[in-house]
Length: 146
Image (cartoon, rainbow, N blue to C red; front, side, top):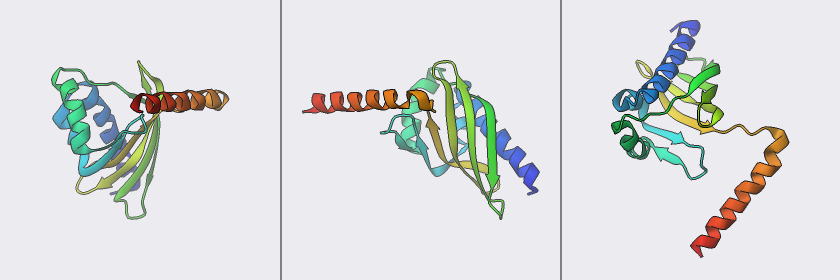
């Protein structure tokens, strides 16, 4: 593949991944993932295999409720052999505002997600406050478990 064509194909696949989620098209959405892919969600406990992530998403998708993330910026880097792509993207979501997606794609006749990481970028000026909130939440959870 020519590099510019490959980057365009990666971008088109990521756009379709997000579109499939917004249309609650479960088979199309999960068809974009490698069988052994990993999805890292926004909660520290969310490290899901495709099977686990699909089990989470299925009730939402089957009820016609997906999630909509629109890319506002995207960066793609290809390996020298053109068979691996790394990406990061800024996304907009109605509920969460700006989020970040990043990950790794592999080429095996078509681009598929090997790893996807969804995160909340935290502005530096409020990072200390957010960290304290996370610590307090973790402490509260541990107190409930004891």
